[in-house]
Image (cartoon, rainbow, N blue to C red; front, top):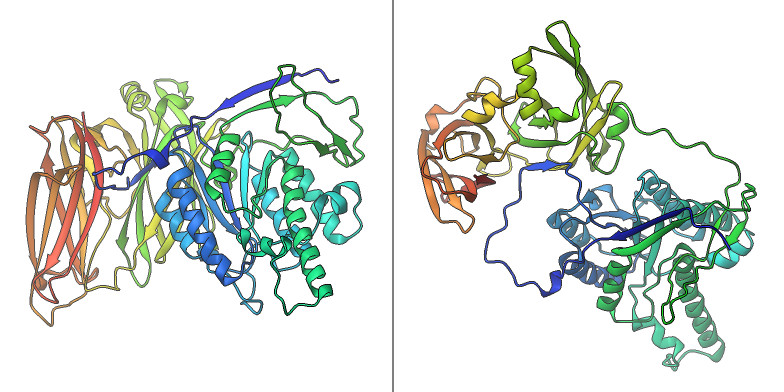
Length: 585
């Protein structure tokens, strides 16, 4: 018997996505992302080497999981523990489009597949090393239950026999440390066998007649071992395995429930010797008819470990795979064509001034911030950029900063591709915050006509925030770009965009751009039209700059979309567009 010293119930509402009717409103992704705390589940979709036919099955039911079983506030990542490319993965995001893109790239590999660029390399030893690397990565995420959906045909090892009860191989040693880390970091494994009933039929007796009795016996034994391996991995980490079953929906429903409603219990063990041995656990309840699902033990540490220091400076914050909300902040970004094959990403980060501590020195209020960012893409992580911002505000400016916040403009250069932009702000000697921004950097040279991102500023936001920094929009807009997307009917919005004309001057033509304010359903509310002749192109950029000013007078409160569309009079009249959702209050 142990005295419970820690009790924390967790309840995350289960969104009934599968029962919701499809919305008639077109979905427009926001160009602003924040670190507002949201209560949701955390999933990791880990894909092992699969045969091509199982790769197809995996895509089908993983799409179903994302589309019908993920809640709005849930986060998920797609990682590889087998063959594959980094560009086929996805960092933590709630963006279903990006998750489905990564899932659609799962194809399965033949035995003579390409070199491994993911977490793993093949056999039991390599798989355990890959899972250990993944679990160590997840252990850096504090205070969260982490569910790993492990798509694999076999892990090649009975972890209970070869890692818990006795470690008799290198693979067993690695598995033991992997399980130790998983249990301490609240990582639960849910192995999913993409074969479903295909291979399980062999066990039930439907074997090929051409097989000898011994070959048939060996195949049956191999199948039993494979299933046992998956089940024991789930059992020791507190999850369950989906094997020999076609009922994927029931498994997903159970998985969501287990990660939505649960209790965390803690106690001080009377056996606190750091001997590395397995400590068995059993949780009993007094109420009749209840069944408890929990881990059945844990591996004691081999030595006493000091608590890891919490992230402090902005560089430490940028290493976090999840947003940090100790400083509330939001980020907007827009991509513009730059020199060569690079794209200039203009960004604005707006920090809640109430979260900052100011020192009063004479008649000035001072604070020192560190601002930084990195981009995580197919080629890895870019070197972090960070710099110091010293604030010395007069009393009236200080009050404005406390009320409306601090806005910092920044710019980074990237090659075309998909990125996760991590933006962090840290008060020197104080708290930190970060935002994870899903960023699609287009190749503006691949089509005859292309449009940049959209940057906004309004009369109200231009004067509300205390601003610092520069980017490519500085000097061409009437104020610093903003990450605010809620305005009043008395406000006036300025919209800046660039249209890149790759048709050139060889065929004289006109580019027409329409900037409109529409309802969520696309009903026009306001429209502004501008035209440019091909002879007026900005040669350095190979395109045209457009700045539209749109008063919101007469616009009723509610959600709207700013939609910018460009087309040309030649080359089959190509049309390109960008949209940004806003709200009028």
